Image (tube, rainbow, N blue to C red; front, side):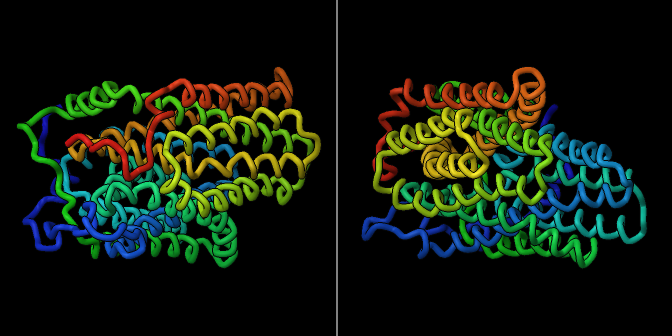
Length: 439
C-alpha cells in the first residue's frame, strides 16, 4: 500500500499554528536546578488528556458488555461484542504506529478523544432507540479501531512533554493514576448504570471530551520527524520493527513484557475461574482485583523516588524478582486471605520495573519510529491476553489449581531470567546517566 490521502490524514492536515510549533522549554534538560515533573506545565495538560482517555476506556470496557446482556439477555453475545472491539484494536495497532510517526501527535490526541466521545454518543442513540445487538457490535468494533489507530498517540507524546530524566517519574505517576482508575471505574460504572444506561454512557463521553480538551491546550512541538520520500505503509511498519529488532536490549524488554503479562494474567484468570467454580460470591471474587489494584497503587506511589535514585538495572532485577518469587509461592499458599496478601506483595515491584523499562525504551527510540515501536510494544502485551484464559481454563481441567499456578509461575520466572541474563539490562544506570538517544 502506498501513501495516499486517508480520512485520518485529512483530519490532521492543515496549516501549522503557533500552538503547534511553539517549542516546549521543559522537554530538554536545563542547565540549572534539577527539573521537577510537577512544575512542567505541559505535563498537567497531557495528564488531564491521558486521564480522560483512561477513565473513558475503563468505563467503556465495563459498560458495553453489560449493555449487551441487558439488550440481548445473552452472555455469549456480550463476549462476542467485546471480542469485536479487541480484534479491531489489535488489527489496527501497527497501522496506528505509522500514523503516529507521520502526523502531529497533539492533533491525533484531539481526534482520538473526539471520535471516542462520538462513539459513546452513538451508543446512547443505540440504547435510546433500541437499535439492537448488531448496532452495538458495530459501534464497539469502531471503538476498537479508533483505539488501535489513535490510542498510542498520547504515550508517544509524553517524550515530547518531559525531559528524559523525568520519564520514569512520569511513568510512575501514570501507573498510580491507572491503578486508581482501574479500581474506581467498575464501582463508578455500576453506580451510573444504576441510574440508567444513558447517564453512564454520557459520563464516558464526557471523559473522552476532557481528553480532547486537554490535548487542545497542550503546548509543544509534536510534529513528525522529516520524511525521506513516500513509502508504503507495509514498508514503514517493517522499518520500525527492523529498528527494534536491531536493539538487543529492547528486544529483551519486549520478551520480558510478553512473558510477564502472560504469566500474571494466566495466574489471575486461574484464581478467578477456580473461585467461581467453588461457588464463591462475586464480592469475594472481586477482592482479587482489589488486592492487585492496591499492590499496584502502593507500588506506583513508591516508584517515583525509587526510579530516580536507584540504577534502572537494579530496579528491574529487584522488581522482577519480587514478582517471580510471589508467583512461585502462590501455588503453595493455603487459604483465601493469604493468597490475596501474596498477590498484593507480588505486584508491589511491578510499577517501578515498568517505569524503568518503559521509559528507557521510550528514551532510546527516535521520534521517527516512536509510534511504531510503541505500537509493537502494545501489540506484544495485548497479544498475550487471549492466551491467559486458555491456559487457565485448560490448566484447571487437566492439572488442577496448583498445577496451573505452577505453570504460570514458571512463565513468570522465565521473564525474571530474561532480565537477569541480560548484561545490557542489568547494568542500566540511573535515568540521568542513560546513554543519549538516537535521533
